[in-house]
Image 1 (cartoon, rainbow, N blue to C red):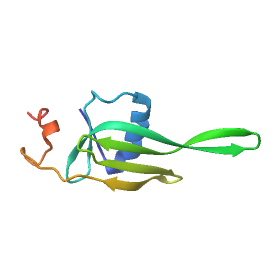
Image 2 (image 1 turned 30 degrees about the vertical axis):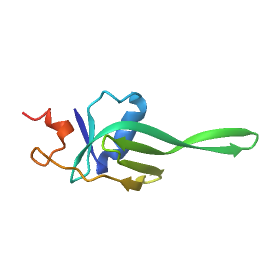
Image 3 (image 1 turned 90 degrees about the horizontal axis):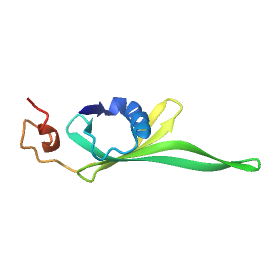
Length: 106
């Protein structure tokens, strides 16, 4: 199990980009209130024309959580900017920790 925070989300995005398929992995984001399981990851690219050729550059990422929430991140020269942060409220049954992570408590 790997847990990232909003402060380390830029590192998480770079790792997720290299990892590829994450459906069966146990990767979570701790947003300071809830632990959210990451189930999907998208790279956002922007295409632009330079002279006679076209180039594509990664401009951000979209991280989707198991509860249907998502966060969009824009890359900046200083690191990242959390653009949109749509979350769903969780009901906790286990010590204020999301049920999907409870299996790892001992």
